[in-house]
Length: 569
Image 1: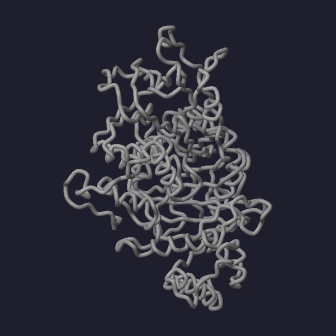
Image 2: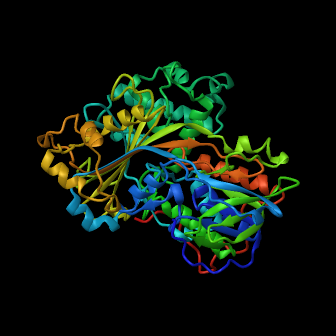
Image 3: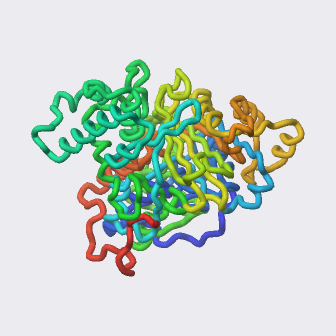
């Protein structure tokens, strides 16, 4: 990004809104503002759309992670004439990824196909057929730019490599062979109670007292056995933390919230005729969602400029109010409002102080607003974890892999029929909330060692692998190879063999609403409901009088006929 292309000056130079970064929240806000007839300039220093929500080729992922894992560079100097009318506040980047380990065990094969991968930076991520993402895609016409396929099934895993099917409907319970008759009857009665409560049937209504109690207590009250409770809590309600250990649980799920999640799951099953289950995944990867809203914004007049870093903010000397931005090209662009992606923070040259109106605001905006970390892993194999299935979700409940495991670990396998990898290969996304880098590595390695054969690296092959460059996506670090191969790795066990992996920890940052609005990093959830809520909140903050995506006379933003939002078969 040091080599700025020779862009012509941007014209006009004044906008209602400038958005920096094309991640999901920023793209939604840009599309909403453009739909509300605001003039919007959308900038991104990257040469692609999506930022931390993008789907990247294998060759590009390591360099993206590396770029966003280093400490910020020194602020660019400004000449004295810069301060005649405005105070210039430098923008620097904050490191958002840590403990990055890239391992490649088949460099020749992967180099030949590196551009055929679309790897999600923020995986695993899916859509529920009835969640807020799908509703927003439908209501805004963004479905014109996306296609989906159904996720085939959901499983619960254990430390022996078993994958147990999650029975998420009465028909699935009836067909399930892993449960006995007593367990089937218990689960049937529970689903009947929940469906009756949601339908408003007075004779089966769950009491207000129960709704406010912990969901795990309600399940115990219903007499459900541990296996069924685990399915409901972690594979359907998608609880993050161990719900039965209040000492480690940071997010105790209430019964009301658990029932709402079950309602979402139930409403998602069968919503689209050609979707077999509750979950969807976009063809070409999750980065398509950000691009869909960018296209929606462009149709409404938003101007896009990629490969254009923003180096500084311009603020009024007297009032301390935001006025505009300075581009790396040297041009100053002005706007009434600004949205920043979480990469950026405001810095001041050493020895200088901000104008008095900003002295109370800058410390809040510049602080590291993190909520911990999420460990992520991407693995590439040549065989499926289940020979008869291509695309599926696996949940490892707390303590299912080792006693100290306090959080759920989620794994999503995606095949080439979703255009994320070459034919004959599979991509596995793994994630778990964690407190630090070491804990995050332990969680991801626990899954890898349970499900995969990690080839040992001897001195000869290690030298061959290390000779690959980071640009090809096949760099390897000794520490990763060592820790990855500590588990079972006997090829005779029948496990898929690991071809390539990327392990990294990502900071979880909150969005900020202040004199400058900042969006959050991808969260630890499977879907995008939280991120959409943040985008709506930020839009309402900057435009309280405007409707968020008002309905227009044409459902299709390009007036080219009705779109099909149902997933592809």
